[in-house]
Length: 593
View (cartoon, rainbow, N blue to C red):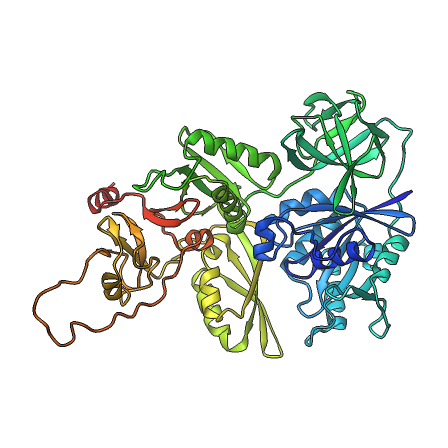
């Protein structure tokens, strides 16, 4: 049976997973209501976080499909997948056209010599403009240095939600056959050199409680069999061996055990406890390893440490430095975009691709029962050719025309430079080049400024000269001076000074940040102060208390709004902000140092 290996790539929310689910459903390999996005966080947020594999059979051909994340923070998931497949389906929203992550994934695909198949999705949108979107994609191909062969890309129109695709907009269609037929016609079968010695490469990792670490591999040459002794080899020459205990092939969204797998296929293997992404699996120890899988460097860092607040240990099951270390080591096995410095005894410096990348890790740890604190995210500063440099990003925003002034002003304060601006149907698309340092903590402000109607996305441009100090915080911290329960009477008086993060009856402690203040750096307050009761009645003393709803902290909000001298305390049931030094005296001493 011929095999075609394809990856589905796109910007976030352009319809990758919906289209993949429709293909699986049409070919009979999944049931109604079953989705590729099966992780709890993916279902809650409506985005793909982890790359996933599936396979279908169509007209006697096996098609292995890899669904990839669309968010820039999970770009490492895309980078390693692209090496293992024969071509990509580039999904583009017919209304939005190419977006930053479209450029990122397309650039990686073209560099590897792949010839993408373009799918213009969501053509049923009232504001869809498929012809203009097609021309914009062609311009992007040219800008990214595509070859003449790559410029002659096949394209198909689709409505993923309805499960239909068309070669022309005027065609009548009832299914996704045009996409599947294009794959068969334009993608050459995977090379099947089964006479050569085995060579395969791992591009993703998994874990099974009974089988241990598993590797998802693409077989390039030869045959792999259960019980076979193989060697795992790195490009630096490191070698380790093991025996294959189980081989699992993909069948729709399921996995089925097979005795062997041939060149061209994608399978899961068990039996190599030390296998890592990018290692070459060989039959003989002297075989040449395959080229390494290159992953872009992280752009931000923050410190993880044990929770030592007054409320430490109330909610979590895993509290110690050793337990946090073990969890981070386990995460490193499957999360290639993450790096951790274990040099210090009691703190861990974690490097990631963005705030969302780190917050997903923290959210998973919180739900598993971990309790910890993290510092404010900082960008990674490098010295390149003697020049202090920092990461820059290209920021694309789509906002209503009436909000453009506010957005340009706020981004300008964060050292963003506008490079392009276009208006269509009352919506302005503005492109900025901005230091990552200036972008950190802006997302929440952007939502407020655009009344929740703006779309914001970015991609990393690389390191450029440091732009100097950026004043990002326009508010100070409201800090509790007492430990106890917050009272409605006290909060009623405090809400005039800023935004509160706590509700009445919430437990608080000295040094905890309970809100922000619009004037000054910080203000120490007493949220436990009750109403003074007397036997005398006075007009006005019995007036009703009206409280504005609290701005509840989440991990992402906390990472955005926290100051440099604060920790974000993350527990299974609560998220709190606190000062590193809890008392006024300790904070005053720290400022003098």
